[in-house]
Amino acid sequence: MRFFRPARIFACLLAVLIPAAGGVLRRQEITNPAADLAAKLENGKIALKYDEDRGYLSAVLKALDVPISSQTLVFSKSSFQLSQIAPEYPRAIYFNDDVYVGWVSHAPALEIAAVDPETGPVFYTLNQEGDPHPKLEKRTEECVICHDTFQAASPVPRLLVLSVLPNRDGNALKRAALITNDQSPFRERWGGWYVTGTHGRQRHLGNTIVRASADDIDDMKKFVAGMDLSAGANITDLRKRFDTRPYLSPHSDIVALMVLGHQTHVHNMMTSGAYEIHDAIQQGLTVKMSDAVKDAGEPIVRSMLFVNETQLTDPVEGTSTFAAEFMSRGPRDSRGRSLRDLDLKHRLLRYPLSYLVYSKSFDALPGELKAYVYRRFREVLSGEDKSPDFAHLSAEDRKAILEILHDTKPGF
Image: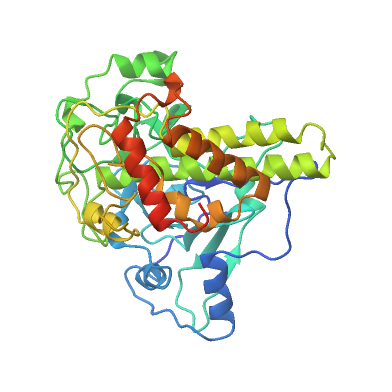
């Protein structure tokens, strides 16, 4: 396997780790699936099979239980391995509920971001040259260089799915970017990504190379509003755009992209909320703790209950087995219903409460914060909270979600 070596290789994946400032949460022991894998490699409890074409990619996905069907392909230069990324050589990203794996063909490092239940995203690389004893290396401090995310007064680790206006080399014009999640207008999603799937008359930025110059763009949103995006719409085969054979899958499934945007957003809200509470505790803000809990908890409640989710105007269908595999992974109630059931006709989920309620990150929320989130769930789902923000949840939705939670979430 022949590798090219950029001068500096760090793990950026989707995300940026911003070191804690001023007394935010820190912990000596890191516990996440990647850390567990690193420990098993260190003590010889697991071996990773090496492949001449893809290095340790297949072995790592298997070890971390990350499905191949989750593959999404991004061709914008959003990694420190950017010299190896282009529309002809997109970076593949694979994920499950807790882990994100990035692979660039013939690049020196495999990139891994794992969500620690208490500290949020933690970043690793795995050298892609054959080694009898491969080792995951934690890259916390280096990842601060990836993106500028210093908007918050007390920065925290973040996962980012960005939409850009890419030129034919994969560079973002004017470095303009929009964060993509379930609240993003469909038209503004996935610039710099390949997208396979059908979505009717809806349009998105995926599969599109922008021919304009940076001088033509004053405002990204206004520019996107005037673009003709039909050439990148309803694409089900990427073989005319680049050679898909080196990849584990020929797909960059639209459903996987939608789930990825939602999931990273909720992870960010939970991480941010946990840091806010620990900040308040360390600063001795006991008198205002109830305010701190509300400020930290309400964004979690809103993101998990899909407040301001962009509604679909036409059905969406992917091209891979991702949708079926995703739905098969969740617990089901006595009536066979799951919070992982997809809708894809009007919205992402059939029962709009995030499946990340089952995650270790949710269970590890500070006690006061988790109690607040649970209380707000009950208020909304019981119909006690009738505010317009939750009007997208019908009486049937609320009843079904409440019943599913009671059957499948111990402690609720």
